[in-house]
Image (cartoon, rainbow, N blue to C red):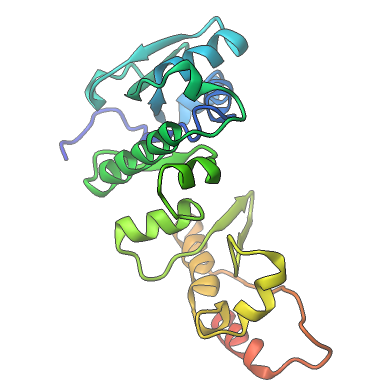
Length: 238
């Protein structure tokens, strides 16, 4: 990747569900000048979906369609969009998931992953997707995490929530609450993996360059839990 004179990181923003709240989130976020002080955002999504959200929420902004990264303006007042889909009005009907919308969502995500893996963008930011639309399109991923893991070849993955000085990694994701206890006790459960404990520590050190302190929290299946449920976690957090 060539050296870019602009020090702001270039980020690929995937729109998420074009018929959902993703376009609105993109417009509202990119109406904040602080975003452009921190980065150069490029939306990967649908032109009509984003235009509809712009007209409704921020008519003072303009859309700037591009066909490659170098065409972006990356300045306040103009939303740079790489239009990867042109969905029909029927497929943009709010709260009505469609197969076309599902294919479009995956296209945005896969394109962002490819750009990030090639080093052409510094990272990706994902809008909310519709699991129903994914299923209609023939994809069986329960969420972004599993799709990202498969496409990047990552063996240890986790979903981390970050706010201020706090980091939380979820031990289980995308499973029904009634299944949590059984899954936690299975060989694939979180207590047989190190990622729920080590990933937040790595992230903290990467972002702050200081040692991390961790704690474990979760449900208790019965009054007297076997040590197999807590000892691995304590060892990993020390």
